[in-house]
Image (cartoon, rainbow, N blue to C red; front, side, top):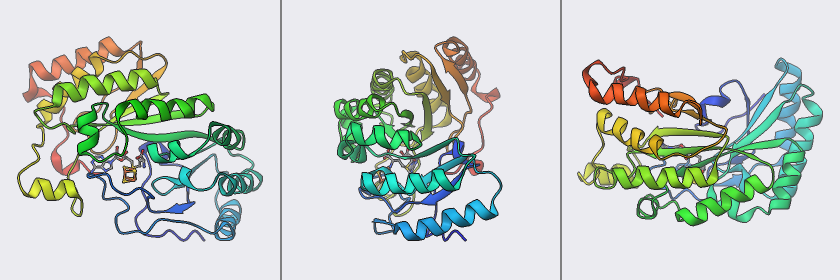
Length: 292
Ligand SMILES: C[S@@+](CC[C@H](N)C(=O)[O-])C[C@H]1O[C@@H](n2cnc3c(N)ncnc32)[C@H](O)[C@@H]1O
Ligand code: SF4
């Protein structure tokens, strides 16, 4: 059996993956908006436990094509531990196509390019990275722990190791006052990184976080769906990407948009212009269907 501890989060594109909790919690756990691992103390799980779960999966699940290593920043675990885990996954699951995990900026600071290269050769070929914003003030307010320059540097370490990146930007993270600058700077940073996948999420105050407390005090201006669409338009118009797949399919979004850069940039901007010129007819998802 697989014994999951606490709530388990995974990106939308890992819906069909086998989720293994290589680590529990998040070693950083300070981002003001993130409630996901606040109740958990960070720890690396014993390899012996994981081996049992992998053996169970090999015996009881159909062919496993994709594995996602949870929790919030599994890449921060020792490279030797991750290498042993990947060897076990590879030998037990013959149909395996790829392994991926979340990689916080802090984990990317710690990991050497050579380590990431070795892990990539063992199957860990994709990381999910929350850029959240390319605006230094917004990154400071979110307590992301790095500025925009450092975000680009650590993302490029992953690329130097041949690892694909799937990156997230948080719409609304600059509030109303910094909406435009947040969009422009986030596009600048995303373009400098040129990830294989790029997605937007809508920053949502969640109980138990500093962001929630600020929202309760009336200090957070949450953007309306139309304001978020305008911010998304600004963001997309400033993106200069090659070979990037864009999605706003995460449950937190009001608008679902998808396309490949550079080919579909014009079509996505035209779709957003349509929304902004006649918001009453726009296909916004109602607030109650949204989630995290
Ligand atoms: C589980 S976190 C892992 C990310 C990884 N640890 C990192 O920092 O790069 C995945 C992503 O969920 C999104 N997220 C977390 N809390 C959120 C919230 N309250 N509102 C919107 N998006 C949120 C952020 O984009 C975050 O990067
Ligand atoms: S966003 Fe990532 S690094 Fe920040 S607290 Fe959440 S899981 Fe940890």
